[in-house]
Length: 383
Ligand SMILES: Nc1nc2c(ncn2[C@@H]2O[C@H](COP(=O)(O)OP(=O)(O)OP(=O)(O)O)[C@@H](O)[C@H]2O)c(=O)[nH]1
Image (cartoon, rainbow, N blue to C red; front, side):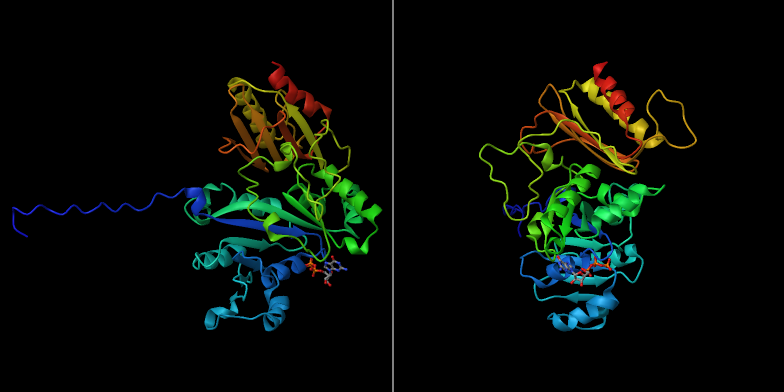
């Protein structure tokens, strides 16, 4: 090129700016009562044509998936096929023989081959600590947390034995695992309804709602459900859909939606007097910025110090929060979402509002949630 030539301008190639959150692969945790139908749900996901590319991490790869792999068209070969099976419907199945984290790290090396991760926990696992691990954990911010975002927790409940199991847990001194699982769930599958009478299924659904008033309950036979209803719920970044009124003329799903959950008439705040885990649903008026900050401080004290503000520190905690969700509306119209698992929580401004909320709401799920807690919280905005 001679000096008089006009240099050709080369467009500066900047790497495309991607939204951090959007680049992460969403992860859904599946927990559930023993024998409730977790494997049935996973097998369905691994074999049906649903159009989602899901990586499924199973506990009992050796026991069940080997057998299933013979019946499923296994596309991959080579040494990795021991741990990863690529299935005919585009899903990926992987074992959790390693510690969970190692299996997930290996899985992430195949990033791009799938769009969503489902992680099965053992029947008796409490999903809370696992959820907390993936949700805003500073230690993972430069590791797995950079690649994975927690989408939600699904709990599979046995329609035949679920009620009995919850009763037994209520009666025990410590909070039983079945209640912890329901408390930590963002979606409940009430499965095996073909084996129980409609009346007893209603009773179990009411019990579930007593422990967790916000998670939608889907009644299923052999975990038959549209996979799209289980994925992409953004349970840790958005306010629960159950906080919003449906748009005018909205038709409720008539197939697998729990009909005793009425969207159009939000319930009055209710305190469920069950032993063990209870929940508290509180309506919150439209707030000033200062009032929202005061609520933030209240939540921090209750979650971190396990006591009500103003109460002296006790040796045994007076309030334990396992899960909390909230939606707060400011006078400016801005909506803020509270999400919390155990002692971790955040309050963030909602990006895309899901609809017009009736008012702000706060749901606390945990122990020690009596009338004093409600009064303490109300005094925050009452001044
Ligand atoms: N009748 C009926 N049987 C079901 C249904 N869902 C699952 N089953 C059967 O119940 C048994 C237990 O189901 P699984 O899917 O293995 O349950 P699981 O939760 O994975 O069990 P664990 O891993 O042992 O806790 C199996 O024999 C299933 O075929 C259902 O909706 N109706």
